[in-house]
Length: 521
Ligand SMILES: C[S@@+](CC[C@H](N)C(=O)[O-])C[C@H]1O[C@@H](n2cnc3c(N)ncnc32)[C@H](O)[C@@H]1O
Image (cartoon, rainbow, N blue to C red; front, side, top):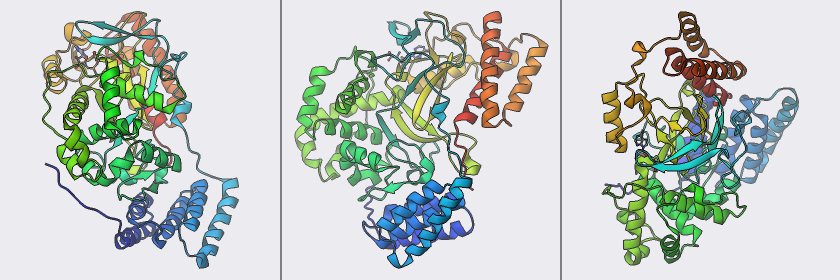
């Protein structure tokens, strides 16, 4: 049951959030201060003086954090958003200091994708996937991905940005931070150090740039804005609604044209491999994403209980649409909701708050039509990770030409007994796992064979040392661990305790490399 909440912009609330932000700023709790300032920006009515004051206060936080470019940008935003002209001299003085200090010292922002790059030539039609991967199909696994050449540990095979993705901002779902909506861009999900601008109409949507704002307004937020408060509190329905809104905008709001397109072009035997994603025409690529998502659905027997009827009926622009097109809309939502089970992935991100930066947190949900074709193994040979809303795939065991890629959905052989793994996978994803660990009955970690005492001791030491590494050290160790896993795997095979330990080290190094380095108290 959805609660309907009417929330409006309010100067009173905006002022009170800014006052809380000011208090936190004085206590040097800069992360929480920025969250409150962003909340204030969202609540402030358009063109109210409070907006300028809040941008000015946010510039003070960035000044303290030695993020001078961001400080200068926020000073400009303050000036064009109603900051009182009589006080411009305060901001000018801060700007002058920024220019002086910028030349001497400024926090350096790293881009994780300077390190994470595709290891081989990209597929010309799928520019986010390497060219040596192919799609196959069999009875045991359905569709699956194989490699046409030997792959080495550490290779990056795909960097996929979801076309359909939502921000989650409700701690009831998978421990997602409640204030997530004030911490990162709702479009690209990059945190951009909370340097965000608000939606002019709703109180819960922020963007990192005018480009992201324009993109949202023309592709879904024109519909979503009116009911965003409710959507943020729904589970998978928020994602289904997003796909519908994006689909509707692909056809200039014509539900008839959307229906025609899906009737004509939808083919359940299709996958991303049937489309050309290299086109420079945004609208062409968008339609390819819609069809790729639609044809991911395999389990047609699954019954769906959730209906979007209530959301349509209360939406100012959509209630008439429901009257006329409810049959098509029900079918559309049933297809998309069936996708959710195995093909929507929770998106993880890193907090820039000092004390929360150790583990990634759930920040959104996305649909990844290529990575969704990779099957599960309790002894996977690739590992998936997230950076800035994108999911990337790294090889973590050598993969020979012709072999299948396997990712881990949830269960690993060395931490859970087979019966438990099989039960979890059946309950959560409705399949009987047929991976090598399940068929060959691989033992739990404490019963795993070791190659030799010396290597085991070294691998255990690597594991305890990894925790202390900085980013540069982690980059060096990453290469060292890749070489060691490759060598030991080729010489001894799998499973061995040393390889499992080194794989954990590899994953840990990668986390250190990709997570944000500028942290707020
Ligand atoms: C995300 S999809 C992977 C792609 C899928 N094979 C397809 O054809 O669309 C997940 C589905 O693949 C199948 N699958 C994945 N891993 C499997 C495994 N280890 N054993 C058996 N089936 C598996 C199951 O049907 C599961 O619901």
